[in-house]
Image (tube, rainbow, N blue to C red; front, side, top):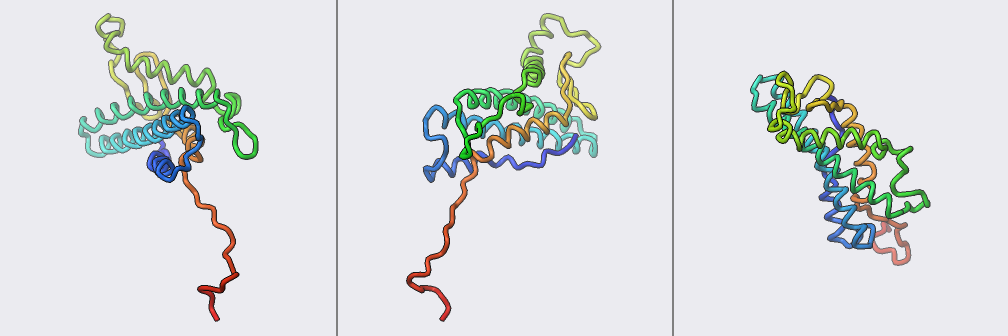
Length: 202
């Protein structure tokens, strides 16, 4: 299970931007969509990191509680990823551009996480998680198949759906890359004034 080398701290940075009145975009609808994107990007990253840490604890200590927590965190990661993609797709539809005129959100051919095949796989995994109780009650899950998320060495599986950890890391990273410039507040510093001479050495 590879690490995701990102800090889930964009939400706090976005909050600071709101406090300072510099959060983009300025339109209320676009602003709320970006808020959702930033929040779910953070959530997906943090849940994946917590899943990985719980799995490492399970492998080291053998305590099944750690395995169960890892399963819970992975479920939450996929749910957050699915919801974050919905916000990302809606943001792309609003047509915002960067300062250089390029689209704020790239087209699906240039952004893997927005491609239909990827979205379908994430949605299928999410649906399998959320509807497993219905399938158990309907007795449509074979008796020899686990009814919770199985965390293997390289991939997670639930029912017939499978996702590799390396894919989750890549998709979380892509979501983060769009959310990052919309959350980070930077200061623009001009050249120092030399008119008064105040504070200069004699």
